[in-house]
Image 1 (cartoon, rainbow, N blue to C red):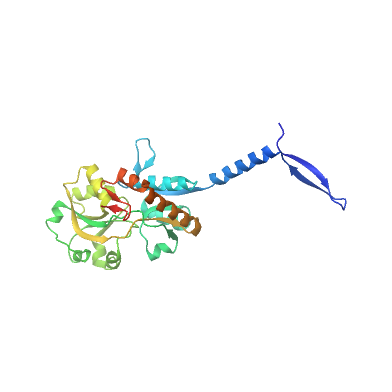
Image 2: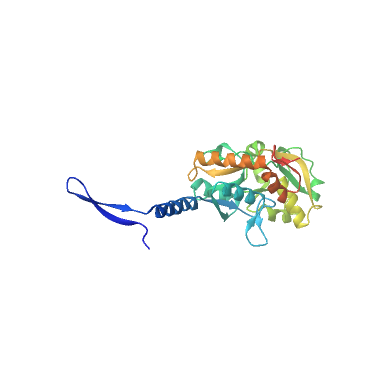
Length: 283
């Protein structure tokens, strides 16, 4: 069956040129295929890792969790598809800066990160809090991170994570730095607290709730009153692979999800509290 053909035409100067002709139905079909091809090219690589309620491997072997399903639905509404990349947080930042990763969910905005990333509107509010083993909580009564200086406290920190302004200043202090133990995975650190190899760990509050419950350590680890940061979690997007227009469209899509109730439904599937869409936090 013929679709599009090629015909020779003659100009007045006697020179020939080739032109394509197509029946109307074929032109419509070609247009539809081209539109589909354009939509299919909107693929965004998104970081995920074993991270409590935010992202984990589901029973079907595929990533799921609050951030996973939030980004998946937002991209779907934008006629885009997510390509999930499993990697630790620190590597995710490196890949984002290099333009090899498009989207890193759950990031906090810092001046350093703004050099290589755009940021979405806030999508989650859960403070970073100091947790201690029960034994350590009986030895140390800190009201702020600076109280650790001059003690033998052993603090677990996750590589590449932004813990707030006080932490950023303290980490320049050699004595405080000596108190810290860098970790690739936060989840494995809870066992180190239980075994007495660490005294404390800074963690997102929601992640701690879920992970301690899943590990059966809710009674072995104590939440302190030391809040290191309360900045909202955002979606970080590489400046090398995204445009301001894409970020603006993403923000409008996220706002629509806040308005129609889908944001609240997605968050409450994974976070153990009633969610406020106005604050993106537990009520």
